[in-house]
Length: 270
Ligand code: NAD
Image (cartoon, rainbow, N blue to C red; front, side):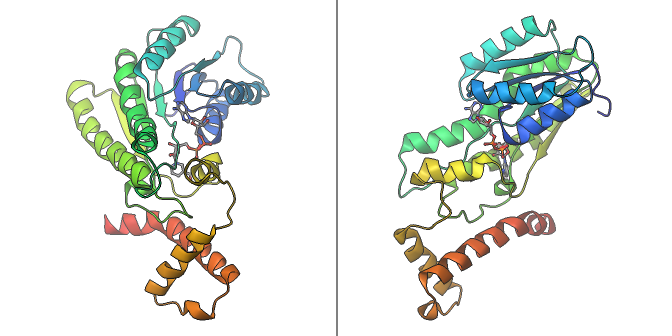
């Protein structure tokens, strides 16, 4: 899809980060946008930023409170959108909302694990389930599902485990591949793709540490330093000569390098 003017896009998690930036770009191209988020405040800010542009007359930006892991919220979002955007069809669905954290089998409860999984995976599934009929009614439509480099392989977090996040992001990739086949058979005018971003400095990164460890700081705790020492030793580093500050720097650098290299390596493996 090249021309977004006059089309209608739905964005989940439009309050910050990539959802916000996409909303701004689409609005700048004359696209109507309906976005949902759990944070009314963040969405109001996205809307304000969108309106800084000189908008074509009649262009609609609507904001809706919805938790993407809850089907009833999605239904309410869809009903409000149809009324406020005065439409029974949409052209673009960006299943973007997500959270990190909650993934350590050693620290977190089942509820914390499931919360991450249900938002990152369930949110995509419910988004497709809810909006597919509206996409099918458009002449041409596209869905974008957000996975992650963690959907290729589970990267090493900075003191954060990714078991729930990675399981969800693998699911999004597999689901999208199967959905593409499903659409070819049943609605070939609706296209679908999956995006698998590498590390981008949005709030999800600091929030992951907050959700799992109760800190946003990049400073490793004493336990994390011990784990990092053991991990680096296993990687052949002579840790006995290194201070805690050296370990901290090396561990973070390695985690970042690992994260940054993951897409290239995974693409090469594919
Ligand atoms: P972000 O934290 O800036 O944005 C996520 C948005 O989703 C926030 O506005 C948040 O309020 C919203 N949200 C969270 N839970 C929600 C829920 N239950 N219902 C509705 N909205 C909810 O992070 P981002 O980097 O813009 O992340 C967007 C997507 O990109 C996520 O799916 C994330 O997993 C994925 N991703 C991010 C990175 C990265 O490094 N930033 C890398 C790979 C994939």
